[in-house]
Length: 152
Image (cartoon, rainbow, N blue to C red; front, side):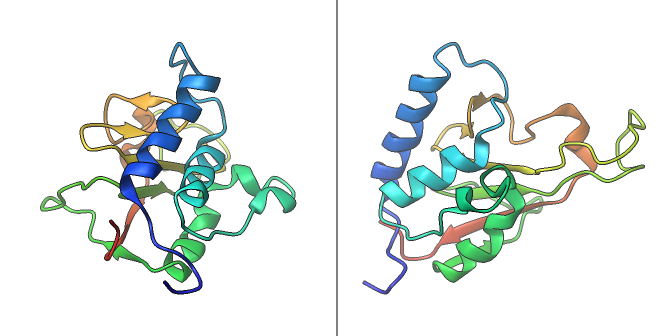
């Protein structure tokens, strides 16, 4: 095992779903803890990621985890029409900037981005999602998928 650890997909799914059921039993939308939930479940399942809670608001900035996923042996997977989600895939959505939403919001919308994981049949972050897109106004946002090639 390298210094970053390997993802055990079953442990990861168990930990993430347990956290969501414990803190969001009625599956209310968006607790603002998506990055914390996904990163903590990854750590508990063997992946060594830094604890960004020490960075001011770091645990909330989902997009900050991209570099750390790559450092932990995850590879970026093309997020296009041919993409087939696999258990343990991590999807990170970038913040939406001014003029990128169909609702014409001003400023940055969803400034922390969003982090979610595929559980085999659906996507989970800090709630169980009905679609890969966490919010309707994310249709113009950029997303990136990461997968650890040798995950169990």
